[in-house]
Amino acid sequence: MPSPQLFQIVPVSVPAGGTVVFAHNININGIPVKPDRVEFDQLSAGLTIDPNLVTTTAFTATNPTGSQIDGNVLLEAWHSMLRGFGVGISNGFAGLSPRPFVVGGGGSGSSSGNPDAFVYIATGLEGTDFFVTLPVARANDNYAVFPSNDGVALVTAFDCPNLLPGDRTTLAFRVITTGALTAGDRIAFFVFNF
Image (cartoon, rainbow, N blue to C red; front, top):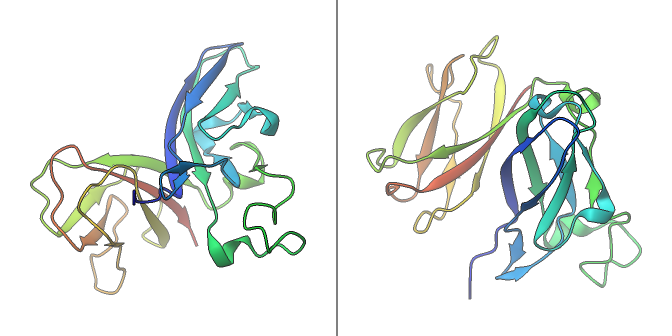
């Protein structure tokens, strides 16, 4: 049975005044599903995503501004207990309404906490304990890191500890995996301040 992909960060680039359709790989046990939540980072301020144009395989982003927008879109499919929204809970895919829930862009409340979403592409030299450099230095080392498999074949779990001095800095954070990465493996990270 194929592994599910419940989270994905999709880099987006939408020209001024343009509309672009982007593919996604959100699935449960290999069956494509519509994401439950779609959120874009502060780099994507100005983009809009129409919930009616989010499907089991793609989403559409529109840029009504006068400049190109390059950013990242986080898609989430909630599984099992996370779907406990009340009416329709007996049908795992009917509990959330409206579905998907599209969060506003970086210019709205979602920008609090200085969020950043990016994809790390492995070199194959990481081993099982390594550091990932942040795309932009943070103001302090008091931030949360959430990893997600974005194309890793053999690693089953990730941990981003913050227990020892140096586990987190303003420039990088520590990652521990249950197996060594191979060149080209992809891990998506969502980072925000506490």
